[in-house]
Image (cartoon, rainbow, N blue to C red; front, side, top):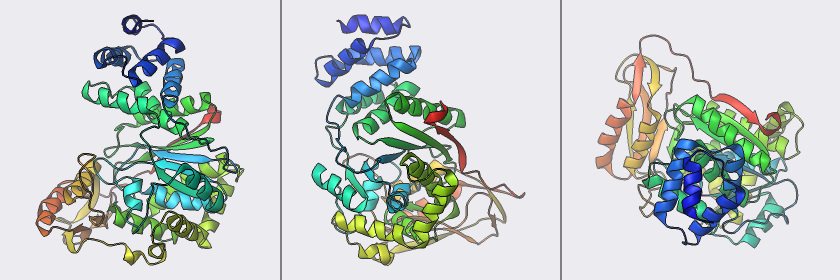
Length: 438
């Protein structure tokens, strides 16, 4: 088998066989096939597309390229959740304790953030002493004993995807639905869960800017998972404005704790219950969305979900006192109010610009090696549809460097657009795709 022939076959629009796909994935992972040939194949795939069968084989080949987690020792149906990412997306921090408190085991691998704000691991490290660097045995033991564990992604998990994505990133071949879906799902399949719930963001602060593309990606990933033998569900959610009110790291953890106390922002709480309902149904703990929501509400109202977060934090070396006393989570000392420049209604927010404001404060990473300040962030008082009077506070900036507050405040205000006429509140949940419906 020659790489030349595989490139020509795809260039001419034909479907690649499983043997051909596995040949190039295995050869490229081992360094036996050069970048320039795989670049040519990626460009051919970009223009000629891939069939559902090819996409599934590619995903499985990448999942098989390294270590795969064996979660068979964990009791019950293991349900994982993945978000395509957005501004203020702290969902795992509140969602996973809710779900675990309802009896569904959550064994999750998460990454660090790159760009706007931190990832789940960065946020969790706001708890002093918290570590995701735990062994597989400890990971499994914690899930069996308390129902939840989160560990960092290892380099040995789907290494083909890591190498392939780096190549796509510099050859303008990232933006292909099959390649995007297989990249995400290869890591999910290798992580070993029985069922997967996806949170696919759409809007100005999301990777997918249009609803059409977001629904297409969700359907592609659900199809891959279903064909690979996983129970799947995808929620398409709005990211045309930040999720919740907090954007940062420690400040987002505080908001997640508020939510577990039943005092979280309406949109963030609704997303947690929507995703949580799918997780409970796939995990066999609820027969309907109504029953699932009732169980999640009960877990929050009784304090069991909050206690589950504390158990989880303690089990991974963190100071669980901060769960009950969130003021222990340090916020930056310089606090600047941003006020409305006019009377009116908030018409639109350039969501990605709010994420850049957090990056300017030091709350995100420009490179994997750059430092991150867990204490900085923004707290939004007003969002799309809210009425404001000139001089009303619309946000607070938390900064460790006073000189940054001016430029950040200016950029933040430029991201807010106002109208004289009333504006409708935005719809959070755009749609749901369940695997059994495909």
